[in-house]
Length: 374
Image (cartoon, rainbow, N blue to C red; front, side, top):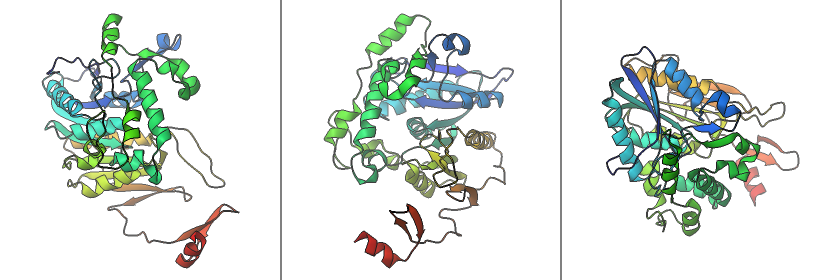
């Protein structure tokens, strides 16, 4: 980077393609890892987004996945989440990509949660033609810190301790990950000399989210360690993006309200939205009513549709006419629906009440609900 900080990257280029569009991915959670023996010997480096990259490379895309500064195998200090330093790094990486002989000059960004927010911010670069923010948070104060109206201490503590372990390359010691942690050996080094990774790790004297969360009570409070307010790193304070975008979330993700807001404020007609029956990250397809079941499965369609969108945007093609502007799933019905706007014109409001004895919900009058609340 311009200040000399070295950023770790995994770069995958499709074979037989002279000039390729590129997917840029920026993560705070290790771009790839090496698994513990013997899986590491059999599978090589893997990442949470590996299934997506495999599909993209087959489709003719190059993939550049980086550890943001101060994390993973990158050098530097992570001053706080979604910092201006990260954004400046992303802009320099975009410039580097478009000047590579294998690049056709077009970039798309894609990511889940933190990675999706970083991609949304980087999408203002002129070379980025489209973005897919998945399961992102539009307002970090409302969606994470005070989700439900009170401080979400448990999650902030979990996230903070996880990051502290990850930044020291000690995920395998994080007890809350359960047995999964025993499968992880190390972040994937960016240099064959492991001493380089050790030097990078010594620079990871990073921001502790828990310390700042304990000190912040109101939205406009300035976090004493980060030196910024939580609003300044939320997407609602970022410039409105006027490029094609596909916003993806689930009804069981606390960031779903942000996806709705992002769809509302977008000024580009090629803006799409998908809201499914998923938890944060899409790892669970939730079925919570009698007769249903809960399956822990990453829905393949969750990958295919965004990649199809990026392909259309990056090749100047029209999006498939069969893909609606809005695709949303209704719980209990277990059905997908299509609309061209949000809220859909076919939707009407109704009041329901909950019977705490039978644990059933049923249509009711507003008066009945008010009486039960009193």
